[in-house]
Length: 390
Image 1 (cartoon, rainbow, N blue to C red):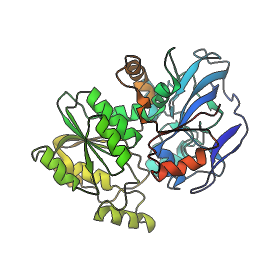
Image 2 (cartoon, rainbow, N blue to C red):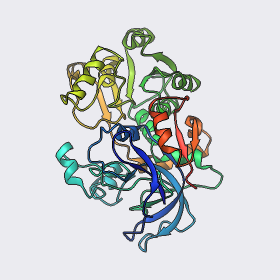
Image 3 (tube, rainbow, N blue to C red):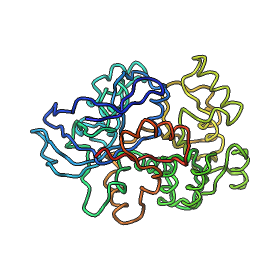
Image 4 (cartoon, rainbow, N blue to C red):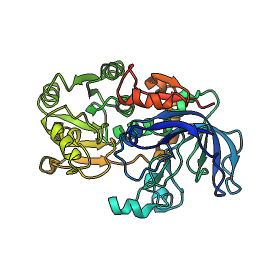
């Protein structure tokens, strides 16, 4: 089959790889009808995620049609249309039983490698390094889905691929970002990063009762999309973000702040972000936490900082004194996608949200490597790429 594969920093290829096969009785094989390039895939392209191997198949936002089912899988049948969560979860362990699917204790066969870096291992992920399981990803014509009686959600008649594809990752992640803010109604929420997850967080904050959303970015197309969703937009290259949020909140600060950027914050946004970039280049730090620092400072006393941007390792100079002395709550997670799927599918069915609004580019797998670059460089107004392998 054709698939997008990783061969080192800035080297993504479309090439032939072996077809997936059923390896366990609970597996399923899906024929991929739509898949997407995620912002976190760019961390792989940029070479900042360890334990990638040449030839690894990329991608973790995938849906398609079931073409083969393992003998123990009674939930799925050939012909079912499903969306596949990016988190691989057994459904039976301590964490899965409590709804914390992204903390699954069984789905990462390389848990020991993750434990060395993080203390404990999260769940295995599709197409996201050998430290997180070495599972082949879904930017391909076919995908093997482990524990396929737990993860995939069946798509009801009448919904298009594009309406439901983002249930695999960015919609649950953006929704979780807003859910973590503990909104009661009437709040002001600030969102750093207007990429696809940020856009979903903006929409979700309004769905959950926020009165105002302040969106922080510098890319014109992303800022315009945020405006269309009703957000007040700050261009961080033109304005001092802290001063602007203070003005908008009469000096109190935002009720909740969402970091939808993560480790690769713009390296020219401020003096401290430039220092972060130097530290990464000289191996004195592994991530650039400029956005997180700013979110902490901009949050009101006893407010919430919600972190859904991807960080890989160690952060430097985090203002814990500010967080502790002012009573901030910090919430963060790899999204336990399966926990959110039923209610989010329901919201799409009711017409409360159509997640396809973020799609700007539609392509084939062969066009994928070039579109990785377009997406990373934010060219051609690229916000979200969807590929149709068949």
